[in-house]
Amino acid sequence: MTRLFVVRHAETAWTVERRFSGQRDVPLGPGGQLQAEAIAHALAGQRLAAIYSSPLEHARTTAEIVAKPHRLPVQVDAALREMGFGRWEGLTRDQVAASEPQAWAVWRETPHLLGAHEGETLPAVAARVAAFVDGVRDRHGDETVVLVTHAIVVRLIVLAALGLGPDRLWSVDASPAGISEVELGREWTTVHRMNTLAHLEPAS
Image (cartoon, rainbow, N blue to C red; front, side, top):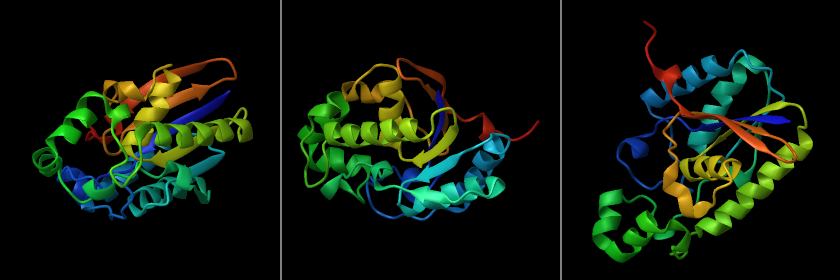
């Protein structure tokens, strides 16, 4: 079996402001740097075969910090980039809800039915992510791998492991710096952790 630690990138100014970053490069903020170091500490004891990252700056920087204790190169793969949100990128949730209330309602209620609006559809993202995960499983049979990616991609990986489709997007959460753990077999999958944030809590 292949063990995946699926990590959402650490905090940026845009995650705090609840802006759609989509496929734009946004740097980590000071809090994000600390979160990335906490992720690295949480995973330092794992025997990792590979660390894969989205090419976007906030994910790549997080991955590079996580990789340091393992002295592994970060393997960048475009399949892990966030869903492209087209004209919504750079806008806050409230701005989108006010300017495009019908599309916003579709996104919140039936996200798999939202049109591309100059970006991507959720089923298209799910297909590219599934193909990537299948490839990782094929390459890393009995190994442990870290994937550093984005909120929608994390949700899709966890949902697929639970046997659920993109229509259930909001059934799982993906917080900045959250860690999920998925075990992939040929005939089954097990989700061991979902969106764990304990590593961000101050030591008592």
